[in-house]
Length: 145
Image 1 (cartoon, rainbow, N blue to C red):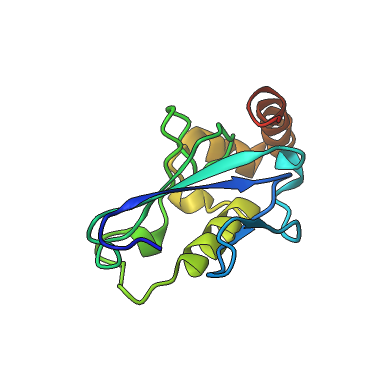
Image 2 (tube, rainbow, N blue to C red; image 1 turned 135 degrees about the vertical axis):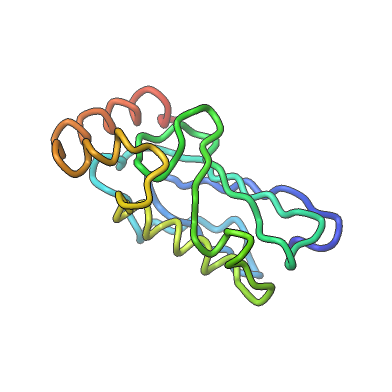
């Protein structure tokens, strides 16, 4: 999958669902795992870049679609900070499926204590309706087909 030549794998989170990266079909879409109600109805692109040193170096994840979420940067890069992808945490036996499950879990349940966007995290904690309203608006603006 990553090989020694590196590369990029773009995956689509369709209708706010997570993907199955099975060896037989690396682009099969699953519609079993919806995101938060505020993000439903959107189509999100998740970019996975495999470095030349993969699996000894972690892949890099970013959203190609803007998403209003405390754990995804809204600086145009769409970066996510996942514990298992940190250099001191990544281990070669880690599976991409586990990484995607962590992404799904983080999108379902934001980790407001380890947020990239602290203002969105505060809004999520203290003004949930406003968070949901803004997230739905971003889906309409950025995540429609």
